[in-house]
Amino acid sequence: MSAVNDPLELLTNKGTRQPTFLGPIWNPLACGLAGVGVAIFVNWGFRRPVFSGIQKHVAFGVLGLGAGYYFDQKRNEYLAKRDAVLRHYIELHPDDFPVKDRKTYGQVLESWVPVR
Image 1 (cartoon, rainbow, N blue to C red):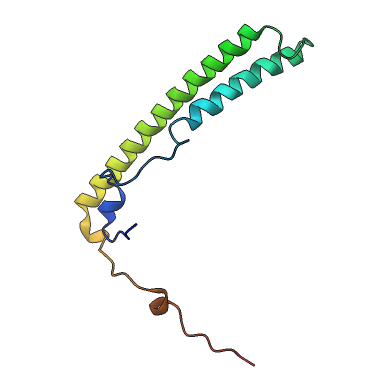
Image 2 (tube, rainbow, N blue to C red; image 1 turned 180 degrees about the vertical axis):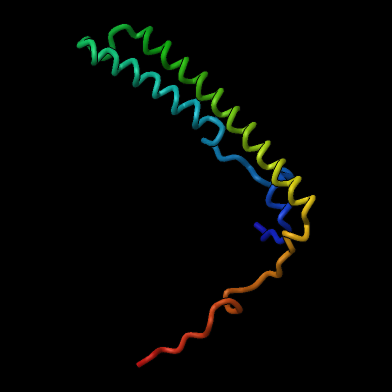
């Protein structure tokens, strides 16, 4: 992985970033499990057996999956708009974002002298 010097490179994806395995399915899966948890909690609250009315568990799980997918899409749209606004601002004001020279740790850190 190479270091990025240009600020615009941070806000562009040229196919170099690969999503993780759980990245696209994490939010729908978590919301689906939360939906099943809500069904279990409702049964517990009404003092019924925890897994009675299994169709309710399936329905809440499917609703949770749908809600998680919807929230994930809305989040991706928000982040894309935010990146576009930031990219546009950087393009309009390049003097506020100069390209910096790379430094090594040896150039940044001061030499250490033990005090005895």
